[in-house]
Image 1 (spheres, rainbow, N blue to C red):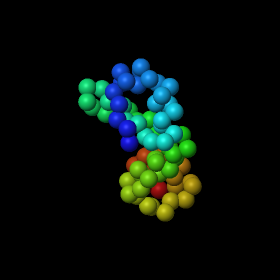
Image 2 (cartoon, helix red, strand yellow):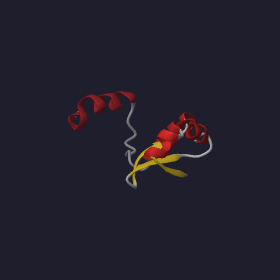
Image 3 (cartoon, rainbow, N blue to C red):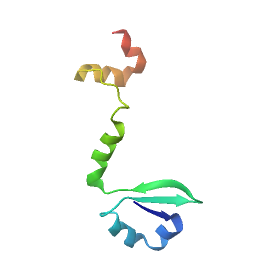
Length: 78
């Protein structure tokens, strides 16, 4: 993983757009990470991996998921 500053990114955007195909890039401002560049093809898998263990496995069907999204915690009463 490559770590660069916002100033470095601004100066060499094309260079880092090419490099992001090989490795993720963390962008910092004043030493604090503020963004991450990743390739689009890796994004879905990365998001799924980040959510493993965060989303409880409730064995919900499609209709249950729809109700939960529409009504939030209120949907637990059905």
